[in-house]
Amino acid sequence: MPASVQFSHLIKLLDDESEVVREAVRRQLEGMKRELPERLADLDRPLTAAEEGIMADLLAPSRREELEDTWFAWRDHATGDKQVEAALAQISTFLSGWKTRPKELTERLDGLASLALAELDGTVPDPRWLAEWLFSSRHGPPRLRGNSKDYYAPANSNLLWVLDVGLGNPISLCTIYRLLGARLDIPVEGCNFPGHFLARVWLDDQLWLVDCFNRGRFMLAADVARHHPAANPAMEELVHQRASVGSILMRFLRNLDDAFDKLGQMPERQLMRRLAVKMMDA
Image (cartoon, rainbow, N blue to C red; front, top):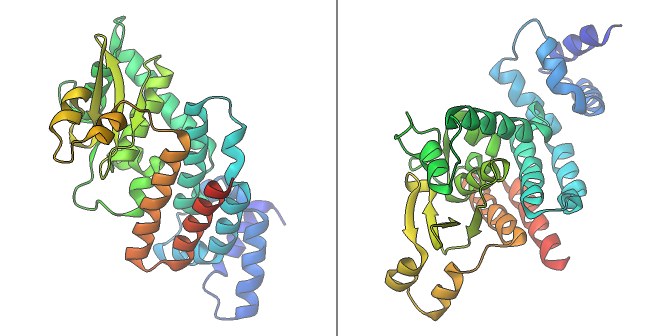
């Protein structure tokens, strides 16, 4: 039986009432899960919402297991930017379900960088230009905005979803700013600011913090350290310290822990906690 015919037959069996049939379908789908995006593209019709839900439920245990087993693969990359990108590609793939592959995040970011380069018209980009291009209306409608209405949704930690809908939380927006900056030779770091992650950049020999959630607002780091309501010597040290790869990933995991807790999705919440424990024990 041709692969496309076999897959179409499996789709027809998704809502079968027999547990034996459903288990057989689950095993078959798990065996071809790396090919599912291509198989779906070859179908003569899109899946219904009900079919998507059933498939997600059937594949959820194996997807959780796969993320946990392969979590530390990001450590194989040589630079902090590449490590952050690889780890968040894993998380985004997990959150997107069986429809995506980790390489898709890199492809999307490459495409966005190419678009930015095309609009530079030969000028040399700097951190402010990139922030305006992404987050403000100076170069047309903002490409990315803060998701104020659904701030705690797990999707805000899925960079593929953020790029699709143009909405995200502070750390996801800052991370896209950073990863796009790396492609344009614009160094962008993270600031592990309490309650609201910020980007850190150097411009005109001064250190700035960038609030990507609030339209890419630039603030002098010294002013933030001095005038923040919680200003103290530790705050000044914090704004002058780049966020490590580990602290960035732990913050994503904590956000997802909280988001899944609010939704009552305990298997996913427990997975995020196990990944966090792995990092603390490593």
